[in-house]
Amino acid sequence: PVNRRGHPSATDPWLLDGRIGGVGATSLIGYGESGKSMLALAVALTVSTGRAGFLGVGPRVEGPALYLDWEADQDTHERRTAQLCSAINQPAPEHLLYRQERLPLWRSVTALTRHIATEGVVLLIVDSVMLARGGEQSAFSPESTLQLYAALRTLGPPALLVDHRTKHG
Image 1 (tube, one colour):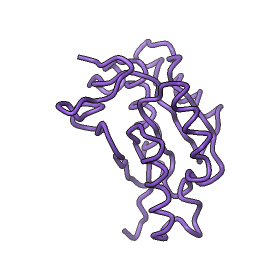
Image 2 (tube, rainbow, N blue to C red):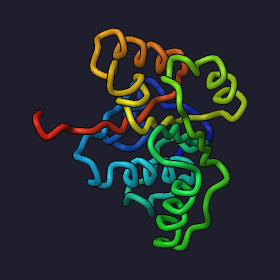
Image 3 (cartoon, rainbow, N blue to C red):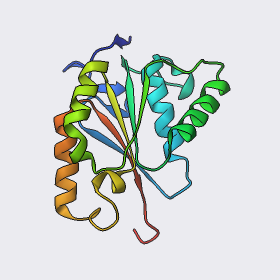
Image 4 (tube, helix red, strand yellow):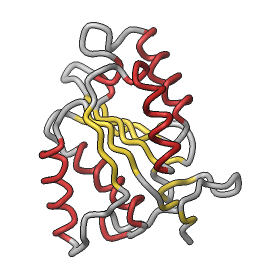
């Protein structure tokens, strides 16, 4: 059963059955060009439509998903959304929200908090972690990690974090 525009309960801590937690962050890690962003978008579409067609498993919570994008642009996002929706004959949902980002996540917390509250966002997609932390120079510092997770806690909804795996680790 889908909790429409709600949040997971204490007895059912999943947003997406056994895959995406109802609190905190879940990481999706892979090499470049491995389909991480498309998978994250399929998760966002599943949550924002309440339909299992994108992943074969339905969400436990349905509501607006906010895709925070440091890597691509609105046109790329819309093209990918159209491709995924077309594959299952589903119109693009109204509740899939998009923001192209440039600043580290922690610097946008105030504006994002208002946006999340206004729209009733139940899931955040952060694509990608390195840039959300602040770019290559500071992306791996302990301070940037603390700032990222503090920002996510402040924002509130569960998050799916898209991160890159390096060839060395």
